[in-house]
Image 1 (cartoon, chains in turn blue, purple):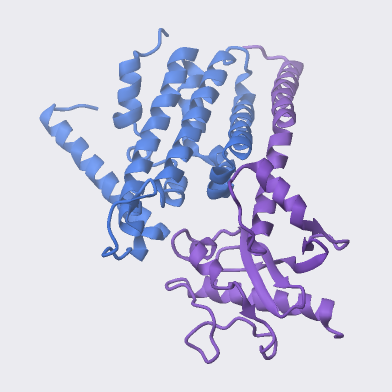
Image 2 (spheres, helix red, strand yellow; image 1 turned 90 degrees about the horizontal axis):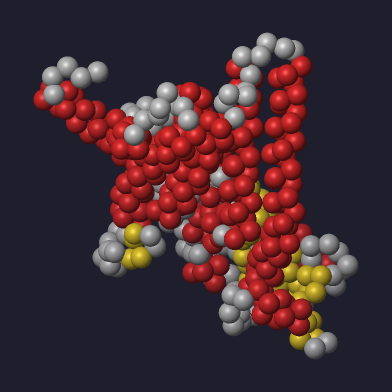
Length: 207
Length: 199
């Protein structure tokens, strides 16, 4: 297998196969950390880092890995990178580490990473796998940022901590609570799906 | 693919050892920085509860001021602030369960146990923007200088608009506010009766 072109990989990760609104995986953390944009950004960067490097590593050693223990190996690799992220945040961004709390450790349970390792990296060369990890991570991060943008704007009147609305603004409590993310995510999935069916109609029968 | 019995085991052992080595090295390399961060955080909290001004966020500066005024007493976790030989007050850990999880922090009382000097939280998992506002300055500043001598039955802190109320609770976060005040009252009462109960 020669591997896919970077363009195709990014198109898949960002839209066609977007982990959040097409595959509906990684939802748990999309609901949890999207109350502030900065939290979402750091979480997204952490996830991009872990997904890309796990995919790369899994891909490099895929020919030596006995097939029946490959999942154990993947989990091991993923957890190593998650711990690296955790240590890095604790050492150099202690404020962020405090804000994200247990969610950094929970990156490991994010289905996106294992999904990409098992679904892509296990059967593809290192470089495309690495790019695939970045693309999927980006797809996840963008959705998170969109949700966080709406929640932070209406819930706090700020964007990345900068005040956008003045004193006249009354914060919407619902936006700060987890259910808000649930509704916004639902709308995004709805929008993406209806967009997809439009494309299908226009382009004839596309799989 | 190789079908042998020992190969997968050997493979797993080698790969585990390899990655563990990397992590062990990283952990070792950053241990000092992380320890310093945590220490700075604790010092900052304690300086805050004693209402001492922090000129900057520089860890060295914080350490200097901390060492100048505050030291840990023989009892672990309890700190005393002194200006020269005069004791300004004592800080002790407070904590309890709130809406989503435990809240931990420190409170400080004056040397004669008559006033609350301040409170701060080191850890909480309340909803940001709601219960999470307990760590905002406007909430914490309300506790500065509260009179502890006139309270009845250990109810030092009472939310307005109840009679003798002295602190505002957080709108939309009633459960968090109530839990915080409950454990503060309990912990302050316990500390004072243990230390100055006989007097």
